[in-house]
Amino acid sequence: MHIFAIANQKGGVGKTTTSVNLAAALAIQGQRTLLVDLDPQGNATMGSGVDKRALTTSIYQVLLGLATLAEARVASPSGKFDVLPANRDLAGAEVELVDIDQRETRLKEALDRHSEDYDFVLIDCPPSLSMLTLNGLCAAHGVIIPMQCEYYALEGLSDLVNTIKKVHANLNRDLKVIGLLRVMFDPRSTLSNQVSAQLEQHFGDKVFKTMVPRNVRLAEAPSYGVPGVLFDRASKGAQAYLTFAEEMIQRVKTL
Image (cartoon, rainbow, N blue to C red; front, side, top):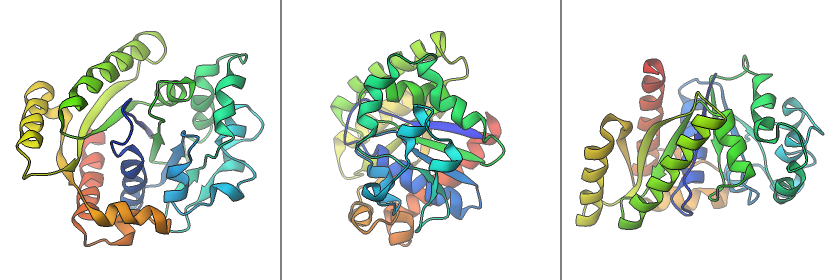
């Protein structure tokens, strides 16, 4: 079982879009996949076609030890993957976890019991560095960083890499950066191309070859509760995520 956190401390960079579409694309490739929604907004849950308002059990109960992962997970009605869903309850978990032993590794413990069930586990982390994100980073073997090729993205990236180094040193010796995924890429923009070249220069083969273009169909898909790769498989965005899934499967073999 390969567990990857999809993280970036900057909001609006396509973390959830990447999480949902990569989960669906991996499932299309025949990989048994679990998508963990660690964000109280529950966007990955809704984007997978699961109604967060109708949940009786969610990741909140799992983190606090009130339910098992098996009791909380649901199958995505649109994709062929499982979802550990989230809703507003999760916002309260931050405060409630403070008094609990081993609070950083609650998610890891829950996932460890299901190591035979899945090939891939993807964790959609919230944009802030919170106790929830820390749970995601402690459970993961690696981090996938989606980022836009723009000026401010590079600043946020150095913060995130430092955070990952600290978690690696103190809490999770397995944690490393698996790769950077360029999303919302506009090849006509000089700045995009410059930043993209800088990333390749600085991070080398840590930069995934796949680039996800700006794509209206990917943006429309969540309102229908369907991953973009299933909503319009022929769109450029969907094709990019399908290619990215293949690249991930190959990269995992070399880890």
